Length: 199
Length: 257
Image (cartoon, rainbow over all chains, first blue to last red; front, side, top):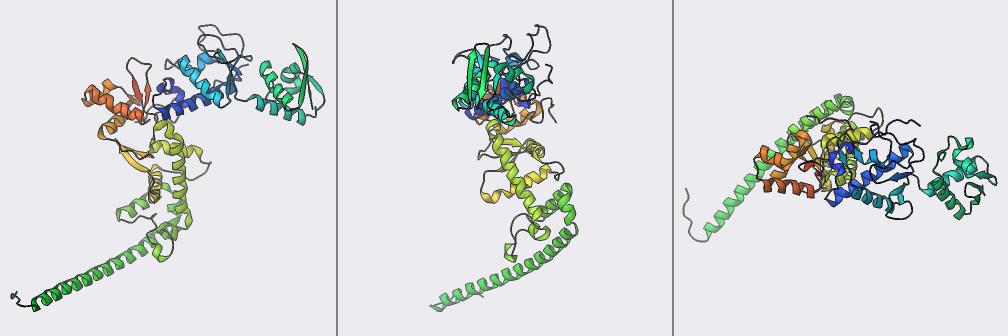
């Protein structure tokens, strides 16, 4: 999937943006800018998860195989996002984690497998928002009462064009979990052949 | 002439004299005021004529508008101030041109406040007028009348009666809008001026170029850092202090002189 390069905002070429600011107000502005950058970056590349530590490949489900080391165009992910090659400035891992914590308070990020992990869900749409989107799609296509496999939902031809097409399977589980809680869906079946019924 | 008064009559006389002085003074004042009033009336009617003839230009042409406002300012008339309320209605602009011009500046003032408020976290409440203009132009609809920096300065002026802390200060040659009640001392202004050259300064740059001692340079940048008016970049051999207004216009923008 070749996409246009992400149009980085001006602050990405502002060298101090990569240093934790000492002034509290400034630091808050910095956190706000970083979190909106992370969200729009992940939305642009449709990254659902971000691996924080440097030099590891991104754990996105939609990107191809990790690019070779001397590839001038880094594959989208934390490596490109937190490291501005042109300026040779990098946001430190501690500062990244602080930003993630800031985003967690807004419900826009969550550590995969509990706090302290290395991989983070980036919720440019929260599971609730995905759930609503799926529910609307089910409503709009008149599929209440029908049974769909999870694979059909995100990879099938029927959802091509819907925004949740290509959704990370784990995130889909979370979203469907929300619908189950709302009493709008029921999940059944085995590990890799799960189905869902909508009410 | 001045015969030394004897007795109680002397007190009366001096009282009479001072009363006469006072009455003469006040008559002089009223005649002066009357003369001034005639002049003002003549001037106002001329201004009115001028404004009516060129009303369309004033409304649509920003540079003409600026010239007109400058002319008013030069002769000591603030066209936006509601100075002529006694005559029953609004400022000269409002009277002569309908509400639109007046509202133009008030609307603009609201936008300026919005931009300043939205960016205060990142720039500590000090923003270049040019940046404000860019931000406002970006948010305007296609085909909306052009806004000049001059218009923005005038719009900031309209905020004054509100007792707000908005004011225009000059750093180097560039006007800035300050939206926090904070005075800059001369060292801080000097640093901000130096920052305009490259977008950043370091302590040793200040020491070399301004012939400051290290503590003096360090104090000045630390103060500005503390105010949130500069950002620090620690990922270089010597810490660099950057102005947040730098490069607001785009990722690939180069500093403009």
